Image 1 (cartoon, rainbow, N blue to C red):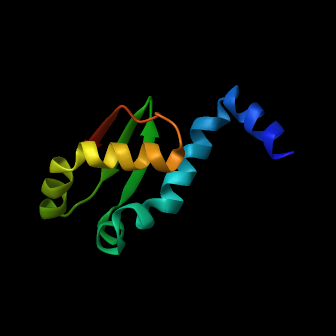
Image 2 (cartoon, helix red, strand yellow):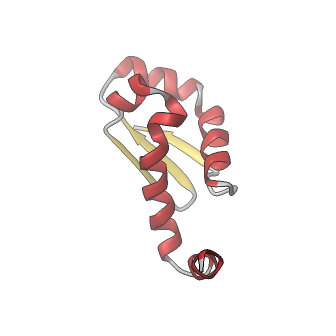
Length: 88
């Protein structure tokens, strides 16, 4: 049953929505409580992870960690989905 659902999602447009939901669920585990607390919005659009925060210091720190964030998210999703990270 699980394999059938996975196959359906691979060919469906729902897959992107499911992965976006997954990233919101595991964001705290990936980045820690502090970063998670001050992150306002996380979304995946066309292989780009958009991270929104109003904290200038956090924005600056995340800019330096973009490659590391991309790697962590791709590992968590078990797929090379994220090609770029944009901090807003």
